[in-house]
Length: 533
Image (tube, rainbow, N blue to C red; front, side, top):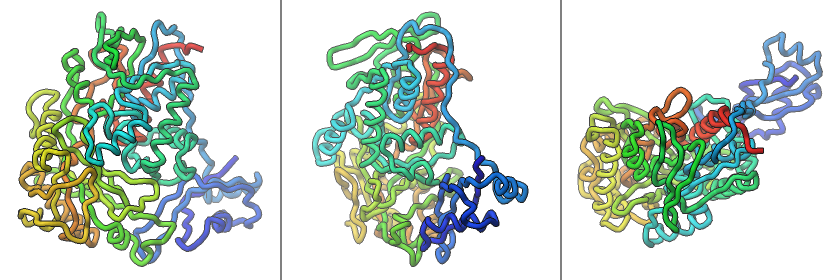
């Protein structure tokens, strides 16, 4: 039996080779009595800048008599094995394929689970595989044309492929560990499975995604790129087939179950579902701007004299406050990253943050966003979608109509003045920015919330409210504006055999939670049907 030791603190200047001695001291045994030792979780504790350290959860193996003594004394706990994904499989034969629509985190992990257990799914992805998609995205950022089917939002890996690759989540599902293990198995850094706040970075995540997809295909799954879900066919309230739009035309695909993992950016899919009678509801989300500071400033504010230490990397932050009865908070912080244009439809500007694994760019950025909800939307389940579209079109016009993003210095924004140029912080946004008065771009309550939030956060992190910080609009894809309602079995409330899952369905937020939700949807399908093996 292995034991778990919590709260083992390793000073910043100490090497991991010291962990065995620290574990032995915590257990009150000789160092040689620790037979094996490995890290289960490690987190950074930088609350006191003069005493920065790493806190470890360790798993230790001892001789039986030492284990018994450690347990009696309360110095350790029995180690709990990581949860394995072991779905219960049904007996009903599959009359037609299981289909997964979307190859973002939810669809990718749903398809991987199905393929691993012998269900040979057919996966539909409207965009391209990630290597081709990267070329299209780079071309757009260089000033080229927007491809509405191959961009930051659509294609293999989904929107998460062009991000910081954060793997933190607030959900407590035991499958979170399984998701991290799969990512590490297919190329994510080894520390992914032990870090409390792991991230992969776009440069590594794209390769991981393509490796998982290749494994799905090796296991008998079929992945079809350039295949968009265009319609549903049902009988007596049960889905029987999907209509698929391809370059060659439209085809009918009979199916036993459809796992709908299309992501929050497929607005045409939301409208198709609404027209098909699927029950949808408007969902609150948040909108605002990206704020950029020098990475060195954020590092000094968070780490003090230890800023730049090789074991620390670029510093993170997360803040929340209230403004006018609404929440205002930072979101998707990208240390040492850049701001990127994420349009997937013509005539609209959307921005997000992205960083590579090294997080070594000059600026650090994060969204500062304000909650929006039904009081702000037109009536109906697609009201939040319409509200988002209106704001993104306004940002496009303010940016000059060529996919540059409207931007301002923070000082000009706080003064409600026209910006006249940038200072010490150069905007990183691709494909570029145009100076604009963001108070005229954002709704009044959003602009007020951003102003209040930045000033509140400046009281928590020195320099956050510096005049020369750069604000770039519009951050509007924080979460889905629609929820596709589902029942306790995971099926759409008005359509059997349809399993909405992931962020686009309104049930996840981020890579890990979306992946878990996709696996849970696959688990429900497997509980009904027998595999094809």
